[in-house]
Image 1 (cartoon, rainbow, N blue to C red):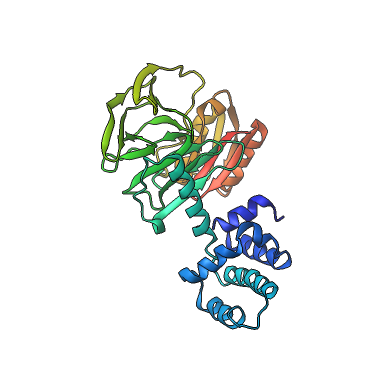
Image 2: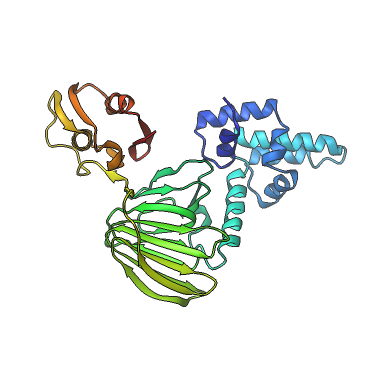
Length: 349
């Protein structure tokens, strides 16, 4: 089903090839929708910037630049060519347009924050839903991005582990002493080597907060390379509050009850032996997930508080797929199973 969310993902270059074909076909039948997502002036700018494949440029020269084309026909051909660009394998620069728009919004909300990642290497993610979004980064770190939050980071995210955040998010950081994990939020930037912390930097609000749940982080701040606060090392249970208007920074305790980090099951490696079947005798769900992750060599992420009172008694065969097993485990326990490129995420519905 073609809906507004799918159309937005399409123009953000986040669709699968099959979804892109379905949307392109749908747009051919409903070309007026292109006006909402790609105004004529932006389409014309794409042509000038050279973002089209040769076949589309040829169609453009043949059908748009002809002096006999009327204004109405011109608009029709613009829409047709937009669809042609998509079906030719180029998402009409929609991803570039939306990324530039979001970067402009982020820059306006955080004029002190300069993004140093080359545009072609940037991954931009915005949570447009009403629920928190769990994002597993290429290095194994996990971000819980709250609604309306936006972040930009390097697509590879191996050597350059910088994140530029507008909004609110939790970070569960994979340890890597050679490549620090840094979150930029307005004037502040928070560095961690392996920890769980929370950053809140909402557009238009005076207060930026950094909360540390576990591990250790270094919080620094600068505007135009000039320090705005003294370096602060936070310990678990501490919160730094920075007030933009006055430039004051305070460190205080915060209530850690109810906070929960997304953890990774197992020891990040496949088991040394693989028997034909496994049997669990009323074992805690966390132990079951650890064993399954090791057995299959696939990452499984979960919130401990979601599984703390769940036990499993059963058996699975070597021929069973991990997705089938996890589905059998999660459905009866009101848990949601999410599959992505990095593995599986289990969370409460």
